[in-house]
Image (tube, rainbow, N blue to C red; front, top):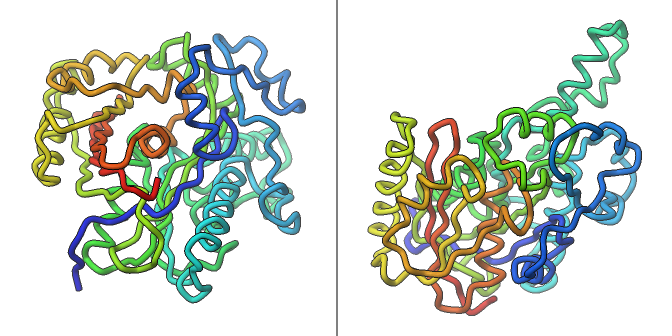
Length: 363
């Protein structure tokens, strides 16, 4: 049975170079100074030598600060970041709204990820090629090489048995996850969904980002994870931090600046129409392509919007597939009750996307 009413965001957890939570995120977004240069874990410091530009990691991150130590020995950093934010969200939402264990059991997961843990895949391949052989690979580390490892581990650790999916769409991955989860909920195929995106910092991702030259070298290579609880109306008594009346992802077959811009403009027009919002009524715009080679195309598509802009890349660095989830978190962190926020993005692959959020009194 399909459901009426826009899906509701009832809680969010975010972990970034700013630290844990939306308060830390708000401070970072409002800060006038540059991004903090948090060093990567000490064991990896030498691996970043020679990489152009700056690097910034989640400060002092240890997965055992968020979940019990047992079972964490072999998990990769992507999964650890995802587990940390999901555990924090589950705990705070349970305390705030008194959600029962039975209700959590039916929860699903939709995570945005570019390739999962790139580091895990490359290091496994290297060990095999360099002579260890496939028979000597640690089988406990093999799951880290699969793209859906993070989403699956979130479900296993928390005993979620709802739909579980990983969506890979570059910088639009988390927006794609939001569209997917909202569709499941609206058509009655899902109840509560944990939706978000995650990107780990590693020498492999850093070299890849710098080699592609899509992101300006002045932007630090960073990492983050953010997940939010998306629910249908009436599922729990938790007040809505926001509703999501519209979200869509499209494609630009013409990958010129004009082609990207036209495709994004069409998606923006569609989500505003679906949400019943005039362009002049948008209070906050969160573009996802600032400080990249796609910035001009996105700005052209947003030329008619006079609302203030919030640039998450400037505040948090290049966070890959976590970008869309950070845009949602930023809208909740700095938006005021009653605001309408517009989230947009373009990926070099041709993907374009937009979402409309109505900020609620629960913030």
